[in-house]
Length: 183
Image (cartoon, rainbow, N blue to C red):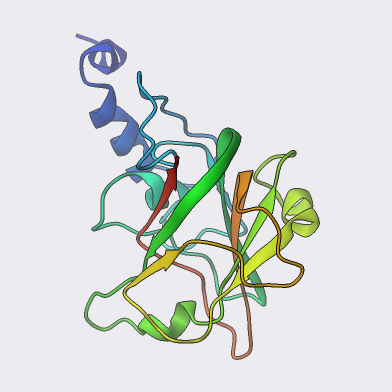
C-alpha cells in the first residue's frame, strides 16, 4: 500500500511524523480535527518561525507531544507563531517550557505574546502584531496566561498568536508545547 493510503486510516501518525521529518520549516503543516477541541484549539494548526535550528520545526509546539520542542537560531529577534485559522476569545494560553537536563530553563525569560487578526505566520505580520503579555522573569516550567498585562490592556483573543524573545544576551527561542483554551 502506498504511504498516502495510510493517511486516511491513521491521520495523526502521518501528520506528526511529517512534522518530525521537516528539513526546513514550511510553516503550513495542517491537521483539522473533526470536532473542535476547546481545551486546545492550537493543536495541529499551521505554525511559523523566524529561523529553524537543528531540524526542530515550529509545528512541534502544537503537535500534542510534550517530549518534543521547536528551536530557533540564536538571533536578536526570535519569534514563533500559530495560525488558529479564525478568531477566538481565549480563556488561557499555556506554555510548557523545556525542563530537560542540561537545558537552561531561563532562556525563555522575558518572552512576550502578541496577537494579530489578519496576515499569516511571517515576519510582516510579526512586525504588525500588538503585544499583550510580557513575562515577569519568574522562570517557570509551565506558564498559565489568562490575560494581557501590557498597556494598553487589550482583548485576550486573536487568530494569530506570536511568541517573541528579544533580549541581550541573545538566546534562541524554544519551548515544548502551547495549549490555547477557549470558552
